[in-house]
Structure formats: structure tokens, C-alpha cells
Amino acid sequence: MGYEVTVDWQPAITEYGDRDRKLAEIVRGDTIIVFSPNLEEALKLVRHGFLEWILNQHTQPYLRLINKLTTLHEDQQYERKEKIIDALAQFI
Image (cartoon, rainbow, N blue to C red; front, top):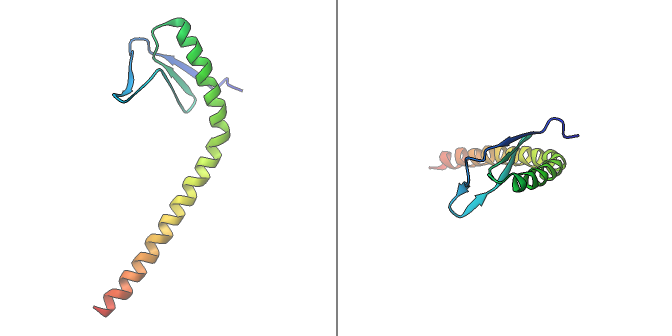
């Protein structure tokens, strides 16, 4: 477990994110991106990112399921709306 994870250390980027929320590391897919120029802090962030990656492995299937269900529901709602519009358009 974890051999597929890569670390991208970008010490030249000292702040990542928007003005309200600065990030020191992010996990995107199988990549941990660390922004701290301090090596000791960067190693701690890699550990943190790796634990986040492990937890993501358990949550990703559920997120995909929720997204599929949401898409299905939106499609059904759209079809129902269109049927109602077509029915109402006949009365106008």
C-alpha cells in the first residue's frame, strides 16, 4: 500500500490557496504536493498527506456512488420537469 503515491515537493511556492485559506500540502489523486521550504516541516506534511491519502482510499468509492446517484436524480428531475412543461404548454 502506498507504492503508487508520489510526492511533489515545491518549496519555491510558499503559499498555495486563496487569501482566506493557505495550504501547506494537498493530496490530489495519488500525489502529495508539499509547499513548505522547511525540510523538517515538509517531512511532517508528507506523513500527514500519506494518512490523508489512505483515508481517501476508503471514501472515494462512496463519493463516486453519491455522485452517480446525484446525477441520476438530476436526470430524472429534468425529465419530470420537461413532461410538466410539455403538458402545461398544451393548455396555453
